[in-house]
Length: 132
Image: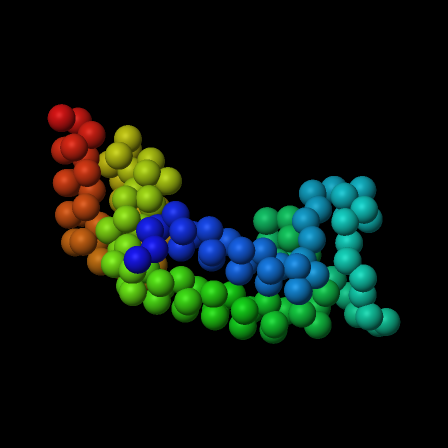
């Protein structure tokens, strides 16, 4: 059985490979754009993917399909390795829910495969452990 850390590391490797294959680059200024841009086919243009990321327009479908496959793989790994609780704890900590008591960002990050009730149950159990 893999733990959450191993699953997330493998997931990140898959994402990194996809970004590389789709010629994604990052730029937060015109200078960075000129320095980091990837090669284009003749007549092709770059498109923004948000958060400072750019890629050739011809790679958008490959990127979108690749991300869907990676997300599908990740969900299956979480389920197959019984890591759902670990993932909830990770997202609760990542979104500082134990400090704020607000579960909204955690629920948004986890997505529709997680219910408010199961997140609350984990939150309550883990919060009691931290404050004991």
